[in-house]
Structure formats: C-alpha cells, structure tokens
Image (cartoon, rainbow, N blue to C red):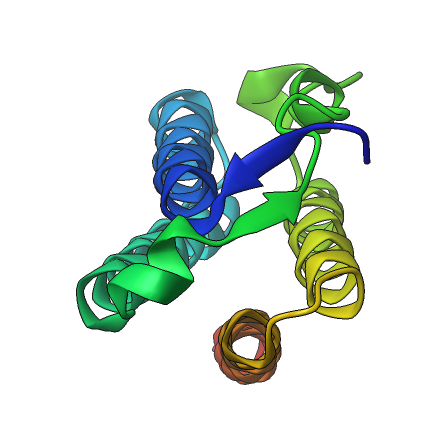
Length: 152
C-alpha cells in the first residue's frame, strides 16, 4: 500500500468495485448455459448489491471526521487481475464461480484488515473492522445459500 486516500474516496471506490463485480456476475449469467450456475450467479449478484448498500450506509452514517480521515491504500492493486478468467464464459461451472467469489472476498478482506491495522484513528479502525465483519457475515450467508442451492 503506497497511496493515501480519504475514507470517503475509498468507500466510493469500494462501491464502484461492488458494482463492477455485480455487473461481471450478470455478464456471466447472461451467457452461462448451466441453470445451476445461473442460479449461483444470481445469488452472487444479490450478495454484491447488498454489500453495495452496506457501504452506502457507512458513507451516510460516518462522521465528517471519519470520512475525511486519510488511509493508506492502493486503489488499483490487482483489481483488473481479479476479473481475469481462463474459462469459456458460456461453459462456466459452479466451482469456477465459487472460486471467483472467493477471490473477490479475499481481496476485500485483506484490504479491510490492512486499513484497519495501518491507521491511527480509532473511528476508522472501527469502521473497517465493521466492514470486515459484515463481509464475513455475508460470506457465511452466501455459503448457506450455496449449500441450499446444492440441495435442490
């Protein structure tokens, strides 16, 4: 991490990332041939939109002091590589989609933890701890949803 952004700018970038992930899942869903995979992608789209709403709520609720606090973050770090795939999109499998979702989640988790640990503001630390915890809760819910889907 070598760039400094304020929390507001980071959260705006984070919103764009969640939108991009949802759009990526949508594009896969439109060409995927397997119905089970399409169902999984629909669940993931919903998941990303929930995360987008959650980040928006943080932007609305955070104090000006927290929104304007500077954090160390590299906004372009590996983002494009997250979206690279080595499979035919129309033949995408549930396992490949799950691996993509895990890749996105690991990226966000590492950023939230890194920012939380690398700043001096308790409010900022709490904000990013909460984002991390919420991401983990949604990941657990996503796992439950996937398991229920697999039981169908």
